[in-house]
Image (cartoon, rainbow over all chains, first blue to last red; front, side, top):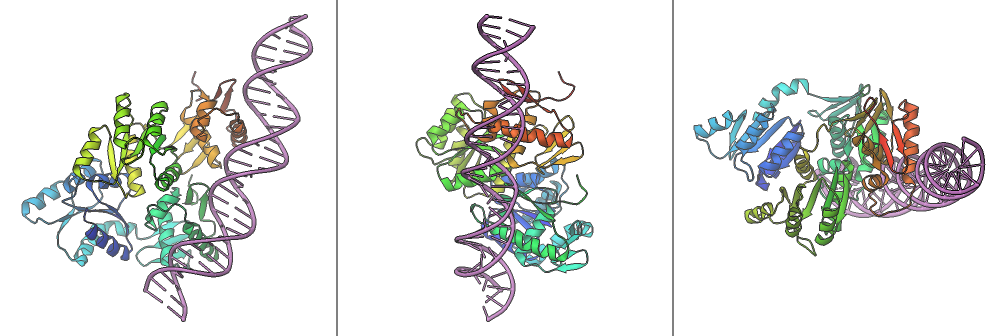
Length: 225
Length: 225
DNA sequence: TGATTTTAAGCATAAATTAAGCTTTCTCTC
DNA sequence: GAGAGAAAGCTTAATTTATGCTTAAAATCA
């Protein structure tokens, strides 16, 4: 499950990101409405968490634009206001639910689950060929063989499979899996690709991760053009 | 798509260049405002990425000069400042968008895409006759046969097909695909044309690349005059 | 402490480039 | 219009360079 948080206060954004990642969500953060909108339109998220009061473009405007673009992605509003009018206003703009600040993390989680309930049924697990990944239970199978992965290994494989049939560039991998935004000369990715390939090979899923030299890696669904 | 980065910090410039090249942009770098302005005025870029604080000529001044010269190329500012005043100042000078340092590469990419959105007509896949190129998955097909190309081979073929039914001169090819801007007597192009023709022939797409003696090469859409 | 993550180095191989010889095409002369 | 010579392009092999893979050791985390 991939979430986008649009929130300008770094403290809250970080707290949410950490907490949600512990729950095995893949979390991106945008710190203003403008970049948030761009990200929401370009990437496919399963849910947006949008603060009402953000710079560059208000949350409500982000919401309107997203709907205008034809997206039905669930949107959850964070708001300090709690007058009925404001809430109605937000929901009219296309939001699915709201939560008042300050809120309990548990409550947010519950509301997220409600929104994702429908999706969860169909998208409970990710797969590519005989490989199956269950982000909820944190398990990986090659056919019926369970593969034990470390957290980083899991994150990398999940990212690759989530983006299957698309090239994952080194920069994107380093950003999404390692959260590194500037270091360009590290070889961690290579090392983890080796780890993954070794474990996958041992379980019978060899050759699933292909190298695109000079660019990155790709996991292809067999039988796709 | 051809970009110019004007940025004096070699680390950031290198990181940007590498990352953007992975996304299949052709990237030039200038390390100060003066040479950046010269390059921007001499060559045709699809977008400029300009740091605010650079030696020789400030980013804002570069921006003004470019506009003064009548160019409408989209300009994206990198700035460490984020006060409303500075941003307004930059946008007034003719910039199209800005991004605060430190920024996420993904966000930069999103903003670049927004600026190029208009230019990008049908960006998903390119074709000429039975040849199909998918820049996203880095795949090339001749009908249903997949052709495996190296990065340079891919870049060259992409450039030729993107400019199909137009003659691509040797100097333009060497500029766009190899990033060489001075006259040189290299025969790399010939060699790579040979490589491409051999692979295309083997896959059943023979004769797609035609030679225009004394000028360059052309890929023609069959059935076009 | 043991597991996990990261760094660093050497190695292997793929890709890029150069250089040379060969072929084709064009031009000029007779 | 035939032939010589020049120029442009093609092809191949050799060389150089870059990239990715692997391993081991160091650092970090829990």
